[in-house]
Image 1: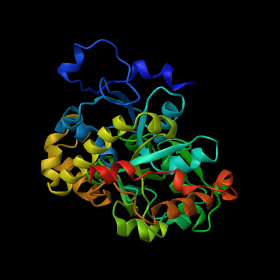
Image 2 (image 1 turned 135 degrees about the vertical axis):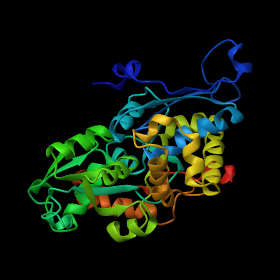
Image 3 (image 1 turned 90 degrees about the vertical axis):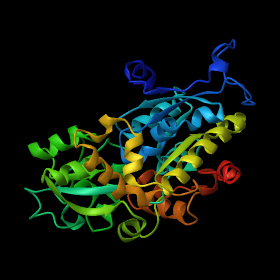
Image 4 (image 1 turned 30 degrees about the horizontal axis):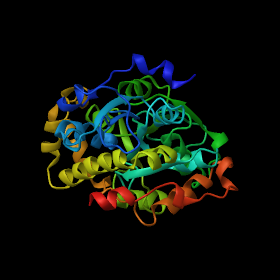
Length: 345
């Protein structure tokens, strides 16, 4: 199903428009990006801490400062956000960088233009009931493991953790359970023994004593331990053709996001939490939400620049289990650009 059939039902969480532009005729964005800059961005879960810069940039007013009108939309999984981009329903996606490699071998040219993170920000959780039998990724065999969606980055990473620990992808069952309450419910009901998720879901699970952390990839150190290197994940990625024909608009987006990343690096988790919508705490309260942000903050870059060795790590991880990528030639230089963030810095 094309994503365009879903978008009208989605909550549009933000439309930023300069009052000086609302009086102007026409809604189309010019290729030059001089005026009437309007961009739709699909986020693979707006309330996930790993994608926090999207909403935070809006709340700080940085899109408005740049003179670009941004409409933020949300899907529960990155793979669905990717679909919306490829189908042309949105101009940008805030999701995992690894989708750019996956799409390239499928004939779609997409690139990261602002790299939010240098680690996945993901946590492999095991339920309290299964904790005795699942002590590491070596114990994934025969288990039902939650992912946000089949073909999502949580699905990719779960498969890598399995095969790198001697478990074939055919020997366990990935279950699409989304994030937040749907993930928590699946864990409680026993429909999964464990799974991969992010904050604030992780913080809620630990607070309710529903599960334990098996593998923590919220920090650069955790990424290196689990994946053998830095793993650039959350990013703003866009179709290369659109980027090349709307460079001034893309520059405005990069300026806004880099400014947010710098702001995050100089403010506490409590200060960041105070800027976010109250319902993003997923019912856990302000203190727990701030703790969730604090646990995840180390994953973010301070400048939006792609980590030097990050793309190679992502390629190695994906080729370990993905038959489409295993024997394919991937041009990593075409999966990201630093042109815009270098100017923003």
